[in-house]
Image (cartoon, rainbow, N blue to C red; front, side, top):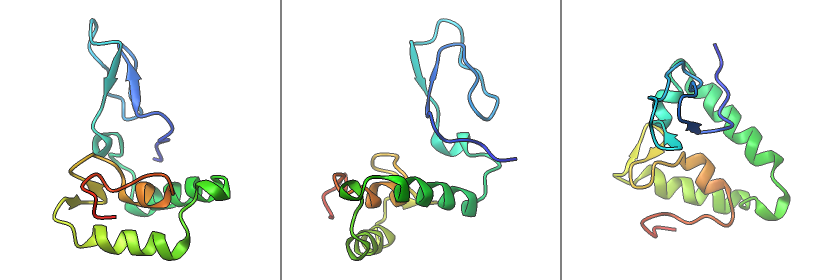
Length: 109
């Protein structure tokens, strides 16, 4: 079963893509763990979704391929990388590295 990743903020009382529901009386915007939202989504599906999203960005918002590969190489050696997520900020490193305007949260690139 594939899960859509279009909205990672779930309103109070709403159901998250994986079927979890936020508690009544919760803050107006409740954030769920990104990894929990992806339960049942394969690494290949996730990678494909991120790459499709990045490819659809206007060219000026995309990171040049050599810079993108360099950023990923740095992330690949970082102790804060876990299962494709940055433990420092919680981002998907494929996404962050692919957006020209985004920077590493610990200033490695």
